Length: 354
Image (cartoon, rainbow, N blue to C red; front, side):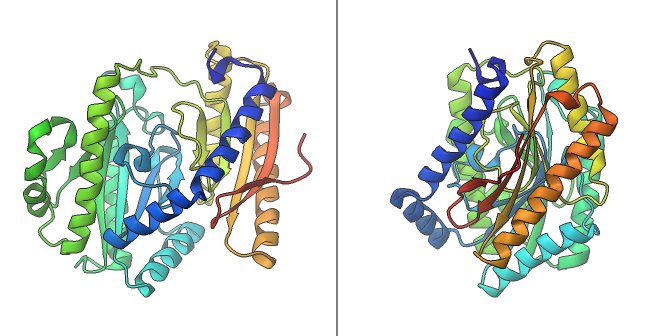
């Protein structure tokens, strides 16, 4: 029996056990040293703007140690860099990285499936061209904020093909480097291909981008060799609101919503609709779903206390949206509030859960 089909209490216990195992692995001596070694060799800071779809996990598909890539999620990967909180999070992260002597690579992603339109992005109505057009808008905004010379911050558009979990890099013109089409023996040509795609990209950023691409080639080969069954249908039974959900690697498990949009009710509404449809279609049990809010903190004291307040607010806000718009679904909601230590990745549950 897969986790999606167990009783809701067992599923919730499984999630928090997964979080505990992730924490233990993240702060193990081996993992800490692996991150330090990686950053010493690949100093470019990496930010990924991506959809709330849990399948889009760039660290996993590139073989990057947890904690290296900074993810920002929203419905369909739809962002507006003019949103006040999003601008604050992204801007402060870039400033912090630059102050530490790092350049920043921003991957602006969209996703699609070659095998089935219905495995694509529901946020854009499964219209890949619309998703690509939207990423161009975000890239233009990033260049407006951080500069178009790309000397310090380099935004680029990156597709994610979910069947083989392959990356597609969009160049400065119309060129696209589709890693699913790169042969096993063609990896040596990648440096030249990347240099042609991004002639203005600083050398170290190219080196660090190449590391991601080489990792993705290995992952694609692994996926092809596994003969895995494709997750054709939505089977999500969790709505995750906030930040700090790196431990959720299982496809079609959770809908992850970043706290960035001024109209936060919209992605919550759409996520709840997906959960309700999953129950009605029999793809998941109808005995309940999990609403989990998580807010990270860096320091104990006021920073942690503020995270507790933010987590409670997000959970209560989302619960109110679901109660008002999905009155038949609301009684099946199991709400949990949590805070996450950025340093250790330890997830602490707050009291006042159901």
